[in-house]
Length: 344
Image (tube, rainbow, N blue to C red):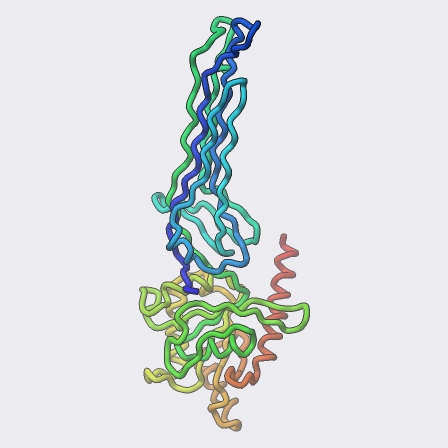
């Protein structure tokens, strides 16, 4: 399935049904009086967050969603039927904005959460409503009001506990394959990942978390270079970032430290919130360094970066060091959840 994280959709709520003009006409009941009923309310349009949808691609082919119009009122004081509401499924993590005004309408982050995006029209009144002591036979009824019509801009931000950050070919896809059942493409060239991937990491039977892999970030990503501008936002909901670094020099000629500094610079330009998230350093591909030189080589990178947060040394290709990393992440996330619950 094609991954789409932005879409526009038009939503049209149903108009309210019109009230009707009617009079009671039965044998032996002369001058029965008005009996025109009210119309029914128009249906509204709601967005509902569901777990089995993970892309906005459907809105490319179904860009208009309409609720049902309310039924007109009938004689004998019968009220028209209310129009059916329209529920539109969207992925978890969908932010909804008004495309014309830019107003943020809501953010759908929990399964089953609904958001009213177009209010149905109010019903019209039948002539019975206008009966009075001085107007016993009103020839008046009102029309239902129009339902709201809006163009919405939908933006999907993946909901994950951990996000992977790094240059192309740093080994992010290899790591997510090693620790979860996700199967992103892995190859010996840059930009094998063209869209975000999610994987569920189970550290034991009852403990798990979600990890997100996005396409590699390059210099200038915050201004739109490469795929960084499009996908850096998917790290905004994560609780922890793993900054993966290839311990070998990159094909561009950059050293691991130079590459890491470029990533840090792009993240800081993109968002202060993202830059201030907890970020751990993961030195990958240590299998390509002689065993007796690994510690010295990695320490040189750490010292040059002045890194003070946790550091892990792994070889994602064969799983070396990944188990200890996953348990450390699980413990960190559980501690964060405990603190959040105490604050609440």
